[in-house]
Length: 343
Image (cartoon, rainbow, N blue to C red; front, side, top):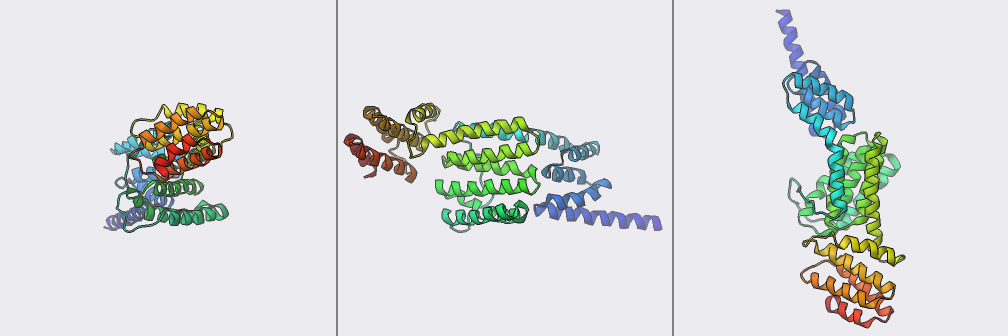
């Protein structure tokens, strides 16, 4: 009788530990979850081994996670095999996603789980993000990762009613969430944040942010002994950085910019009106810089023709800047072309 009672008490204690693991998992604390699920997995309680493996993958403890997946598979949990395969393919999927983003392919394939409860300006989101970034730089990712996730949960729903400024602001939060997760020793949770940051940055056509995210991903891959993947991320980041340089207002090497922009314009699909308008305007600006006013006029004409139904402050700003440069260069025909659009 005493043996039965002892066994009942043990089972009850293990069940309570399992529930604590579930609570830690829901709270986004894989380290604490792993402690509790390890106890339950030792007693072969339910799917504890699978949950333990998932927490360990998030912590970057790949070898131990794989061992527990084998235990779970032997106990009949087939999802454990899928968990191993998913972990092995995570970097490959991220790099494929990054490659599509870099060449300008639209990849908006997810939405937040909830709708926004109110309105928050992108400037307010950026201010909070900058404050959290300052904490990260001074005290480290562990000190602020939870606060970054809270910030992200509050602002992510805003993308469904936002514009390019909002997409950029939320992308920066995802970038910071991934970076502080990496610094907190949670490498298995980083890539989904970086993927969403890239998606939103592409939606906003923010090449410099794409370059920043890819550089951070490369640094994480290097830290975790994946130099080949790091090199791929850095190479893609370099392409994005070059694209950003070609788009910028300051014209320092127009002939090189023309070569880069000509290639990019050819990759844009019909639906990417804003990106094509901005690139064509940049081509006009760089041709104006080398004195080819006729070619500049042709690119402006193409940009304006394709942007009849486009409403974008950023595209209009690019055209205004070109008009200022055309006026200074005495290219009145260009000024007249643009004034029909932006005044």
